[in-house]
Picture 1 (cartoon, rainbow, N blue to C red):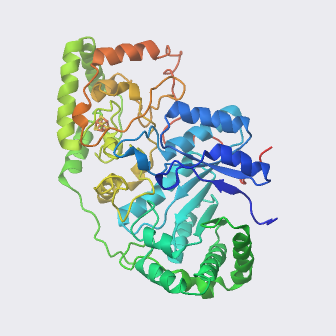
Picture 2: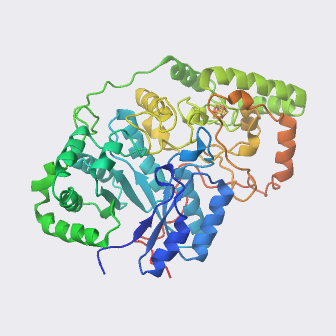
Picture 3: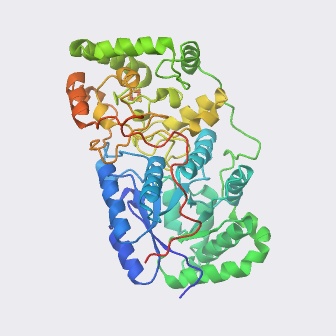
Length: 508
Ligand code: SF4
């Protein structure tokens, strides 16, 4: 009935609540004549479960997927399954698309509404990674700051990125704004000024409804004026409201610049990329300086960003091969490596060390175990899950201080979880681990479920012993094919698959 509507998005795990099954709801939505855009999160799903979901979507001819990390599950307390991250998810869907010819259309999320310097820079960098991984479209987080909408558009334009972006327009009630003012749900934020405006608005006879709808209509008009591909309207389930927003936005669109300042509810002392920076630039610290220096002098070490074949590297490989043949010795080496790295980096013995690609911050110290950048759930640079600064703030600060931000764009593949509890140095030199430039295809080979280690209970992470892990690995690994390593995946940093096209896929 409303021809401007291209699709209906079906949320999953919004705010960390279990909610309804998004595929089931998507099927019902499609039966009513609307194209479903199904949210697929990384919450509570290992690789095999995600693979099964993709097969189901394929069979149902539901091709539009919103690929996101997802909020921390409310019921899970301090532990939850996060086997892969949203960049790895987008890469895998794109790879499935290329391999099977299924016309999946992948959307991804981005939040320009981050006001902490490193947090924001990483949001944009991660968006680039998602697009390189195969995402066809981006959808922003909710926000009421027109300058930030412009900032994101400018960032993409400057880099020649033509990927369409939808701006999120949420019909915000006073109560929802008050919650968002405290950072709930994760990643959503409403400023004090916006809350005050909504409180005043809610005193009207209609409880502020018309004011809310008018603000949403203005947001849509401004997005159109800035050059967004469309709006992603939420916060109301009433078709009459949606119609009113769209019609009114059409009326307001020609004078979007006049109303631009009515959508300025940002953070006054917050970071804006194209404005004077109120926050001090990060400086180099001791640990990354030492690690970078050693990697420069000894380019064959596991944390080197530029590992090359050399006589020294072959010598080390020989030594580790010998160590690997002596289970007791390699077990002690694993203990030595683990306890050393635990003290310095908070190592949790994942066996697939990517410290060198993450400015010497361990990805396992992120509760969601992201390897390619932060999720959208941070609150002014703080972690959504535990009381600590987001680890990605430190990664970005170190990279910026070393003028190495570009290096963070490398695609980090999912870890081989069968290696948990084994020595990562050994895995590195013997070519067993999954790392940038050497990803393993772990989607069909029974890589085991992902898990999040309780952050302060890493003592529970007793090694299974290298011999047991190695035996399991040897039994499961396919024989290497002639001319290449078995299970070799796509090259790091490369766009993993061809794009499916430029518009939402109409099912059936
Ligand atoms: S081996 Fe894994 S858990 Fe340990 S420091 Fe490296 S990335 Fe972190």
